[in-house]
Length: 86
Image (cartoon, rainbow, N blue to C red):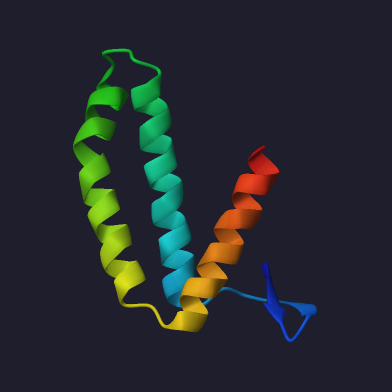
């Protein structure tokens, strides 16, 4: 569940299907970046390097197909995710 902002108040509701897919892809991108950042020549790092452009392209395509409300919902979810990671 994610908190979405509406008319100055906060309500909770499940993310839309496209937003949920985008969040899953974003997690995959972050995992790939983490494997690559470790700098080791492991199979995981090499696979991540190959998959990263695919995940980024899929994320970009999905975001371009979103409505303005879905984009806003995704931004709030990503902001919340980054804030909790910090």
